[in-house]
Length: 307
Figure 1 (cartoon, helix red, strand yellow):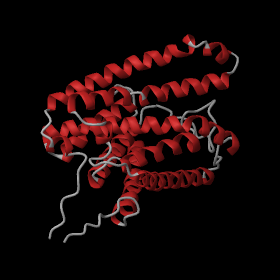
Figure 2 (tube, one colour):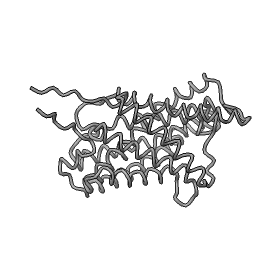
Figure 3 (tube, one colour):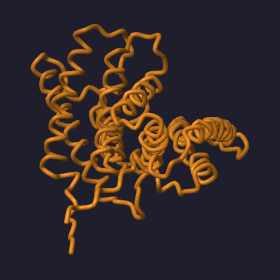
Figure 4 (cartoon, one colour):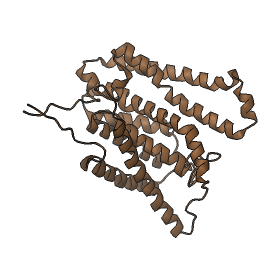
């Protein structure tokens, strides 16, 4: 007997015949709810008198402000939960997996593979810097400081990543697929929105960063469609953010990192910079897809038994 088709996260809402307008209403609920929660988080230190303690410790102030920034993104899970329940009659879990249960192992394997590939590119870039007479780790801090920083903040990074994926590759993608019925036509506008929100504005010239986020978003959509669930995309996103924050140090001072490369300069990028990003991402994405999908390191084939 032929194997039954694997459940698909992307096609779940279309299979349930959910109306496209419900997703528009849901996005509105998520945006308004997230803004209101962000306002509360900004006011929370003064309401709890934590701001007085923060004035005496710059380190504490930096950590609290970072947690509030990440928390304002993670808090989208709250209005998203309400939108999915009220408008669609299903749980938040249905934006991660089309069937009951979560695959934590899938997320961890994906994070380890993608994080390892990102670190490989960092090492290669560092060796090129050394060849050119520049330091390998220009602003790195001792690992105990980085470990303490990670212990205080990494849990919120996990929530932030999960919220972003649930919104972009979960809710918005399901809504677009209801309207288009095409995984490709769904992935493209999601990637444009993802790149725009991560680079603040289309008016500046940081096309290298835009290209980076656009390609990552396409990969996240592709792996979600291939796996039929969201955990692999969450893993990629988590591996990217953990490596960027705690190894490369993209947040900049005063946050410690192992290498201290610093935040992107934000200056206009030319064709050479964009081409370098495209070439690098082509190699990294190709390796991830070959090892993670073709070789089964991340997405493993279902074994279906039939009578």
